[in-house]
Image (cartoon, rainbow, N blue to C red):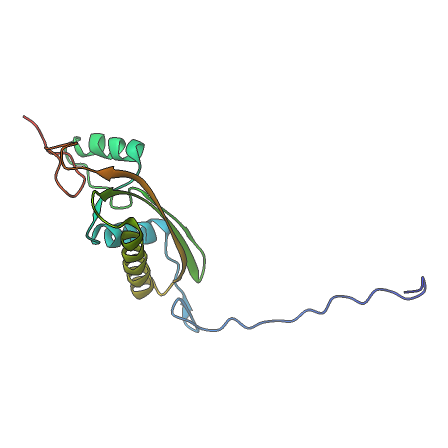
Amino acid sequence: MSNTQSAAAPATSVVATQPGPLTTTHGKTSIADTVVSKIAGLAAREVSGVHALGGSASRAVGALRERIPGATVNHAQGVSVEVGEKQAAVDIDIVAEYGVSIADLATGIRRNVIAAIERMTGLEVVEVDITVHDVYIGDDEPDQPADGRRARVE
């Protein structure tokens, strides 16, 4: 290119937003991260072989929280999400039951979480990353129910 020639301005194009399940001609629906986290947490807990969600620190905080009278269960414990306008990515921390195939468990969790989020929100789930923090052996905590909450000892 010679000094007398000017660089061509980059071509710009206007792409019309296509209406979808969350953006229509009548308005836009936004879904909060907490909603997607709660859906993912509930869907992951439904899978047989998941003992609890969260790493040891978040489970300890959850156990303390449940001892407070009137406190609610945190269904999003162990789940973090990134939610965009059309897509979501999910990270789930779990404790698996001893004897369960972790590969099969992860596949089942992914399938259930993706189906629940896509069905309920219309968002496309682009990834579900799963971290297995521990394996639950029934002798570890005999007074703890299978849903991961600690039983009250009086």
